[in-house]
Length: 236
Length: 273
Image 1 (cartoon, chains in turn yellow, purple):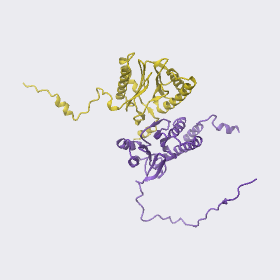
Image 2 (cartoon, rainbow over the protein chains, first blue to last red):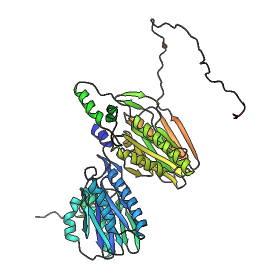
Image 3 (tube, each protein chain N blue to C red):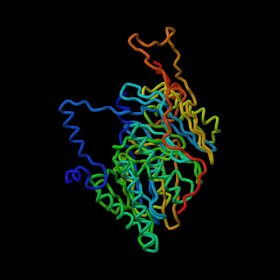
Image 4 (cartoon, rainbow over the protein chains, first blue to last red):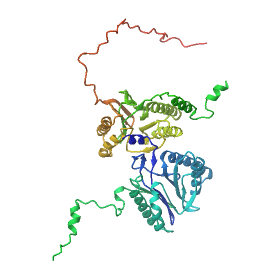
């Protein structure tokens, strides 16, 4: 009992599965929605994909407080930068600002981030910024505690030049797989698709996600499945 | 004079100098002073016309109930209230501080305060103290942009939710909300649900108890229902009565009104050169 009470004062962390994927024409960002304090789910419907500018979004994982404050700072810097530049900020600039804050405060912050967006110079780009503040431009990237279960999946399924539909389906499938295996990920799946036409947010409630072979359809009684295939007894 | 300068922190922010002293004292055998915590169940929900906040009224000091009827719903602005769980001093201090900042902001802007303003002020203060200010808050209010409900954790992270619970009794109260909450509740249904959730905390959590406080905030109006429910009345009163022990002697019963120090003259002429 005591451990539950102690854990309620634990820092608010997002167990999390976050994914960023490029496709032909843009990017798709995906995340689960579980925020936990120790063993208690503090928010089962959180939004981990935060807006930085009209065309750049960031997926947050790790300490909720650290990632929220970091996103707020970078949103403010990007706003200033857009005014000074006179045109929308590029994804590369946004990612670099996130990396600067993350690297320069590496001793105090504990947050892994994925920056994704679309600009007219480079098109759709995904940048991974894990703990420590490395900046890596990648065609796709995964993060959070649930990502451990997805490395093999992506190695198998990833291909260049997918369509928007294929990319969205891939992201939803991947997050659902991670939710099935990772205790710290759960809730709903949120995706954000960014391309030259703008931004579109999608939301997949838990009960619409595809089932996997360990999860069975609810049955009324086990006897139903038994009676369906009962073999004839052997007659000698 | 240089000694005074050394004791003040060189830069802004928290000075951890006294922590070493405290550690040394504890090693020498001094028991650390316990602080007043509000065990607590605090809740909030959004209903069709605004937000409703609820709280229990027990303040604990370790295993002892220090205050049977404390106030956990703090005033922030005429249209914003904040429930606080955690260390009582921290919740009081941080809500008072942000309440003053909001008042000054209202003077500067000439407008009604917004809930997100209070949220940002609270979250930046708590984040800069890295969780050492132990205040877990449920902030709710109605402003020009509509009704808002937020939870704020000691480390500075926030969530925006249609219904929220915090404190040691949060699991008991969340169980009630998860089974009975729906969108578009009326005022009476909302107040009843909030009272039920707080009662669930009061009866099932040892850190929460005594009475239920409720605060209903709607556009342009708020009702602070202090002690809305008293489900723990003192039922046993001794028939023998409560008398003073034999050694106690009443010396004098006389009430002396304090002398007025200042004479207020009504009217009077304005000062002139």
